[in-house]
Amino acid sequence: MRDLFLFDCFGVVVGEVIPAWLKDIAGENAAALKEEYLAPGDRGEKDIRQIVKEFSQKFGLSADRIVEDWRGRVRINEELCGIIRALGKDNAVALVSNASEGYMQLLGIYDMLRSLFDKVFISGELKTAKPEPDIFRIAVSSFGEKFGRVFMTDDNPANFVNLAPLGITPVLFRGAGELRERLYSCGVRLD
Image (cartoon, rainbow, N blue to C red; front, side, top):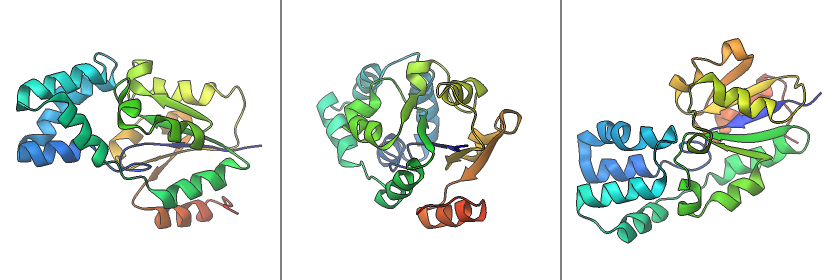
């Protein structure tokens, strides 16, 4: 029986983009702005084009400049991608990310994510965001099979609050090496 490995995107597979940009632009107000502007996108109430337009108006920057800055901040965790590829040989792997519809495409990472994972679940497209249990139910049930175990790797422990009743094991991400050790301790082979 296969296992299913779910992974968050930003802060895990790809470094943070908009939160880092907001911190540079707005300093200590970044967290409040993230909640005000990004949370509605995560829930599917706005797409990324609307968010870029709002940021453009708020900060007096052109939309093109904002997008160029965001794309310049994309950092792929190649070591983790290697682990995901190894897991995907004998198991199912999926991305479960809170993001606005169109965001992955805007950053130019969507095709890479689609090639890395069996399935990609974006909260803005599904209209349900982590930590709500529905996004996890959708991801797991989409495979149409029973898994031996299901793991969710995320850098935000707040996203783990609804996992236990769903039978999903949380894995806090602090780096690829630590993840590798955690998986080995759970009896997961990566070779």
